[in-house]
Amino acid sequence: MLKKVNKAIEALHKFHDEVKRDWSSSNQRFLGHVVRSPPITFNCGTEGFTEDYAVVALDRTKIKKAFKGNVIDLGMEISRDKFNNMMCPRYLSTPPSQLQVS
Image 1 (cartoon, one colour):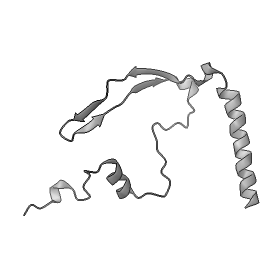
Image 2 (cartoon, rainbow, N blue to C red):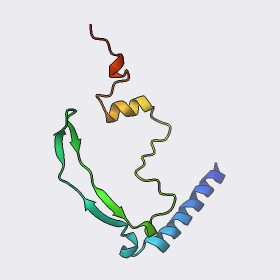
Image 3 (cartoon, rainbow, N blue to C red):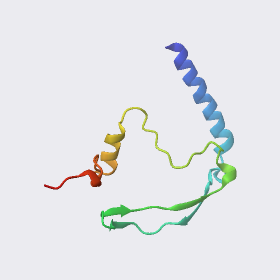
Image 4 (cartoon, rainbow, N blue to C red):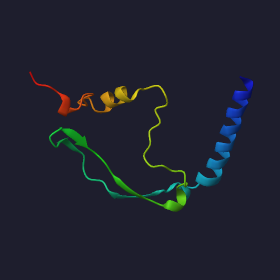
């Protein structure tokens, strides 16, 4: 357990040093600019969803090569079905083509 804690502390110190070195001044924290950000729209399309987005042009010199885009790490705590039901309550586990109307 102590070994794991020491490893975490070492990683935190390394991260702190990187932040101080690479992100301390405001010009280092500027990553890009907003290209398009239309007003939020409610009840869009036939599904009635909310449309809220922005397009951002990133300065590639400030983004690491490992950057994968817009990613959410949910770990192993949530199943795919539970996530889909939370994000899209109207999501059907049975495709509409396989539903039977009686």
